[in-house]
Length: 328
Image (cartoon, rainbow, N blue to C red):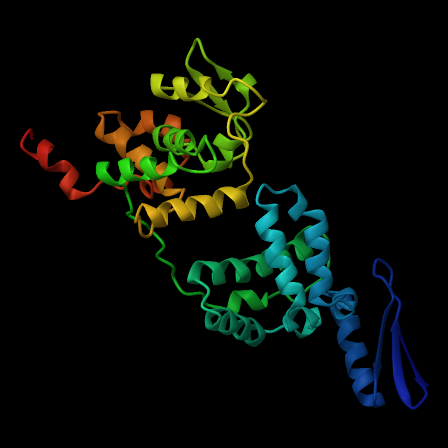
């Protein structure tokens, strides 16, 4: 039964019921206190009561900090996610109480990110991260939150970030020509290896010598993006590249920041506009398909689990089919 007491000019309600934690709340007048007490007791009798006391004392920044310490550290993309979490914890939205967080706050954040000229997909990453943290608090940490998440009321713009950039033979030759003059003596071979194998940058950089079977011409990328190992066949050209670097556990010792700066410089000198390292993966997939390999064979090498994701990289153009159309 509810107990209502007047303390220091306010009315404090305390409710103790078996199978529920003690519930307390303070009101300015007694009628409002009684009304709230009756509703809580009724909800308890019908097993519909939700205790929001933890949420009412918690700021969003506390959830973000806990998520960073317990969840983000276990992810492969921990570096980029940590950056986004730190930015959100510095933002004013993180100072809002969980029970007061509304869709208008999320829309305001979305507008601010857009005004900072961030790409639509990047804006979506920030909003989605907040939603994931909210759901983790509710489902994993057992924090009682409102039944309807404020993120469910937010409509995000559809993002079309598909790319169709593939190097032609002249561009590829120019890329290697400039890379051959790089201050990193292995840069040309690294780009060539990426272009031929279709491996992700992190997979190739972390490829260990012990995971290459030179006689069988096979290499195994360990713990890839989808969490699985992937073994790929190596062309004679790739074997020659790897054998040029006989020392060390890995073949291409370079940090991402150093590589990124050098790759941007190479592309600028080679006059390759709108081209990224990840586009080399698409170049490899397109070349494999054009060589006559079927989709199933290429997916064994690329590691794509779904056809829809694979098609984002299979950037076959109508002009690539001119010779084949006459064979139909």
